[in-house]
Amino acid sequence: MERNKVTIADLTQKKETGRKITMMTAYDYPTAKLVDEAGIDTILVGDSLAMVVLGHESTVPVTVDEMLHHCKAVRRGANKSLLLGDMPFMSYQISSEKAVENAARFIKEAGCDTVKLEGGTEMAPIVSAIVRAGIPVCGHIGLTPQTATKLGGFKVQGRDAESARQLLKSAKDLEEAGAFMLLLECIPDLLAARITREIKIPTIGIGAGKDCDGQVLVFHDLVGLFERFTPKFAKQYVNLSPMIRKALAEYKKEVEESSFPGPDHTFSMRKEEAEAI
Ligand code: KIV
Image (cartoon, rainbow, N blue to C red):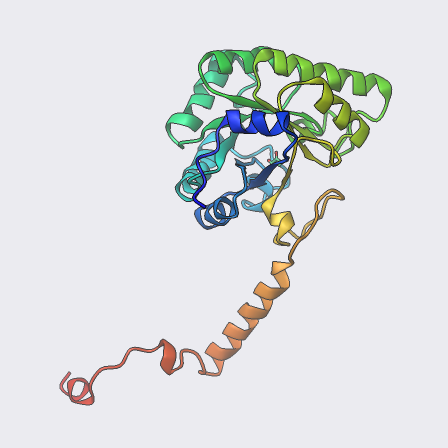
């Protein structure tokens, strides 16, 4: 059955009726097309792009222009899924004006439906300014990779009552600021469940247990294409890297021994024409 384009109202309704929301990252046209055709509700062009596609050590170096380049490709492949563009480090922290300006580029230039940005209570005024400008914002709290150094590294957040209370407050402040959804990364399942119960907007978990309103994974973790490290929360559904290595080795061998291209991959011409050249 042909599905309709997913809207924010659909996601809210899913939360209200207890149906899980699906999200997957994508960074290019073919992947976006596969994700969209799989019926995944939302596609995030995450700043994880910096690591899994561009080969950086962290998400910090990726620029707005680089993000937009990939968002545009994803937009061309994503017909029905709601598209979120991830605002990179320092594209929204400096001032509300700068944040609105950059958020608008994701919508106007790249065709994203919404943006996502990292940070809790301290980011509420920025979220509010972007929302007031007419751009839907998804928040992101818990482990926020752009500021991982400040958080003491890539560690589970909110394990003690004090920091958990702060994360719960952040969730409420972001909801109050107008965020339409909230991504919860690397926090204990009991805290994620509590946040999910106490706010009306949907929560999307990654390393936050099963009681969030939905889940997200990084595409390259799901298919085994990022081999530098695998986070505990990432489930690999297929391991493509060895398959690709095998295909490349076979190709190399066949070219070197002249068995590729064979007749099936070759164009012919009449002998007389070849002789008349
Ligand atoms: O950039 C990203 O891919 C993310 C993940 C948490 C999904 O933000």
